[in-house]
Length: 323
Ligand SMILES: NC(=O)C1=CN([C@@H]2O[C@H](COP(=O)(O)OP(=O)(O)OC[C@H]3O[C@@H](n4cnc5c(N)ncnc54)[C@H](OP(=O)(O)O)[C@@H]3O)[C@@H](O)[C@H]2O)C=CC1
Ligand SMILES: CC(C)(CO)C(=O)C(=O)O
Image (tube, rainbow, N blue to C red):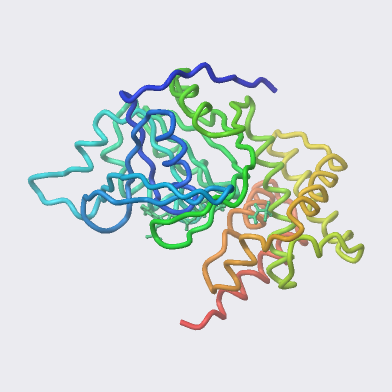
């Protein structure tokens, strides 16, 4: 695997859009702004406006920034402010949930400039397969992050973890080095990795093992260290390794298992995102986690009983949310 180190010096002439102004989108906004770049947000509602964003850092320091928000649905026929700002945008970072990616990109597809690059940053896998087919000339990159951010209020986030981020090429033209440097210098502990797909599969294994089990058992991540979960965790990983192999990605089951247990230990006190989604009766990302493993297995006429069982249990819980 090759990695790319950043040699970026700050600039304000690079136009970066952030699609999705949630916890991770706002965290990246603060981090990009600190390097001298002035990103803007694409949201799914509301009018074009300025918004004050508040960040509470890990050290509990609070800072404010002003951001510009644009929406594809609020434009009058004569003045499409989003189209105008997107015209010279060089990169759009997509920070929505996995199941929101298609709709979010489709809402802006006709406005994306021909030489603009897209970077997908979400948990789980899958949306890139659809998006790469829809892009004509634009390049696509994908990434995974273990940074943590929590929304305290709509426009106030708390950084909850200083993890690392791995980004890399998916399809079409490569992200120009100047833009790679910008992203790598803005996002702490980030690396450009080629190939990046094995790293996404590795993160998928972590999420496939930890997320549904903690949601079903209603426990913190650390509870999965109990020996009684070992057989099911091993089965989840075995199935994933087999599917990844058929997809051309070789993973070492033992290394992956050790990594899953390392994350269980490192995040022992956390409630996983799927646990939180289920506790708050929100749609989960299971379709892009265990659901993705099952879907890719089907393409290769393979059965993934354990992942399928977990997928079914989570979607059943979701279907029982009160309306
Ligand atoms: N938060 C974290 O600590 C981490 C999150 N991740 C991953 O990052 C991804 C994003 O997570 P997170 O930021 O927490 O999620 P949030 O729900 O906080 O943010 C998603 C944002 O996307 C917006 N959105 C949804 N659809 C559209 C659309 N069509 N157009 C424009 N905006 C849209 C939502 O808007 P609205 O307010 O209207 O719903 C929301 O603001 C997920 O895949 C998550 O698993 C990964 C690591 C850590
Ligand atoms: C790594 C882990 C499992 C941490 O909780 C996570 O990514 C999630 O909760 O979605």
